[in-house]
Structures are given as structure tokens and as C-alpha cells.
Amino acid sequence: MTTPAPAPRHRGLTEQAAQSAVDASCRMLRLPTIRKHFEEMAERATHEQMSYLGFLAELLMAECDDRARRRSERRIKAAAFPRDKSLREFDFDANPHIDPALIHTLATGEWVKRGQPLCLIGDSGTGKSHLLIALGTEAAMKGHRVRYTLATKLVNELVEAADDKQLTKTIARYGRVDLLCIDELGYMELDRRGAELLFQVLTEREEKASVAIASNESFGGWTKTFTDPRLCAAIVDRLTFGGNIIETGTHSYRLSQTQARAQRNNTLTAG
Image (cartoon, rainbow, N blue to C red; front, side, top):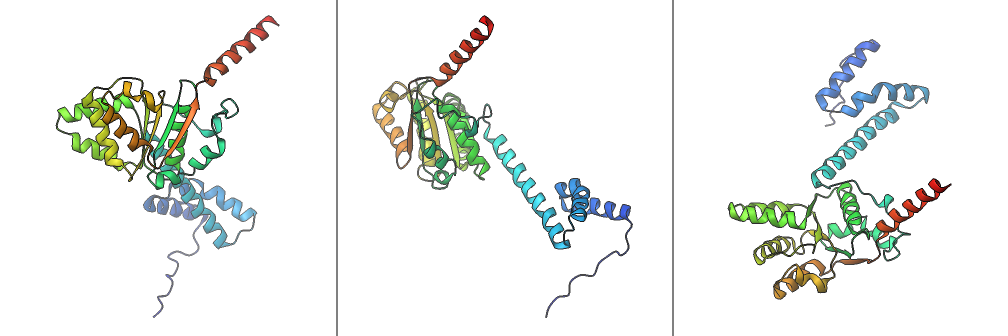
């Protein structure tokens, strides 16, 4: 038996009463975008002679788009990136070592879905942190849970958690995110305990969830960070198996940009 459509609850509402009813209904149904824009959208619908169905579709699509935008903003905020960086801002011409096609493929987030690792290796100023944050941001916008941290900060947090008997809980928290971005790995030597705790985090995520790292040291130099050779080899294995390794080179394009700006300023001053 077909259920009949509900009959209209109100007939002949005045314009003001209709606006109040829409406002109250949007509050109850938690539709803030429709509540904010329905009047201007109704005017546009009248002007463009939209059908009722077309007008309804416009309202609902606007609400859905705005909700998606707000979810992305929340995920990006939860990732705790230290600054905003986007692929749009990255100067590929200044760093020919980096393949734009590969970076834009990574921006689709498929590697995060598959739980693959990513390593960005290169000297300071070559763009590895920029790419780490930008690709992490892209992953968050695609719906993935992302967390950014400095390597030393993560290790310190793990050591404190172990001292407070909260290590299992802390490792599980890092295990729940889809992408863990670890920056500045290799800048400081880690003692054996810190290295072992970091290894536990990587093991928890192995082949299940992605880890992306940025390091100023090639893998051969990681023994300065992880002084136990066997542990170092195991960590390198966790971070490279089945993943992408991008070498950003040794020439600092950031320094080149600074020098170019200084030269332009000197030329303008001389002129």
C-alpha cells in the first residue's frame, strides 16, 4: 500500500510568516546555510523562473557544499599544521628535482587510502616541509584524518606518556589517524629509548595507515639519528616499503628566492 504524501500544513502564509517558518525550520533541522541564504536564493529562483524542484535542489546542494567545506576546515585544523601551505604556491620551476605529475598524483590521496608511506628527503630550503604540509592538507580535504608533528615533539610526547603509563593510549591515538606527517626527522640524535618508542608508532601503523616524513638526511645518514644500526634499518624499512621516495635535492630554492628579492630591491634602490 502506497503511503500518501503529507498534506501541506499551512496555506496562504504571508511573506513574513513564510520567512519566519523557514528560519525556524532551518534552526530545528540544523541547516545554517539554507537559513542564511534562502531569501537571496528565492529571489534568484524567481528571477530565473526556476521550477520548484530546481529551487529545492539549489538549496540542498548549497547546504551540502557548505557542510563539506566546514568538515574540511575542521580536519585541517585538527591536523595541527604549523602554517598554511598549498600545492598552488609551490614553485616547481625553481626545483627541477621534483616531478609535478607525481606530486599531483599524490594529491589525489590514493596512497593514503592504501596506507602507503611517503618520504621527502632533501636539504633545508628545498621544499620538503612545504610539500609535506600541502599534501597533508590535500589529504584532509579528501576526507582523511591527518596529524602533523615534529619528530622531536612526537618522541618527547611518547617518552612522557611512557613515564605516565599512558603509552598504549598515546600510540593508539596516533594509530587512529589516516595520515601521520612527521617533519624534521633526522635533525637531532635520538636516544635508544626514544627511537624504540617511535618505532612502536611506526609498527602500529605499518601497512594499515600512512606515514609521511620529511628529512634533511639521506637514509644512509639516519644512523646519526637512530644510533642502533638494526633499529635504524627496521625504521627505514617501515617508512619505505611499498611507498614513494621523493628527493628534493640539495639546492635551496628558498635561499635563491631570498637572494633574487634582495637583488631586485637593490636594483630598485639604485634606480
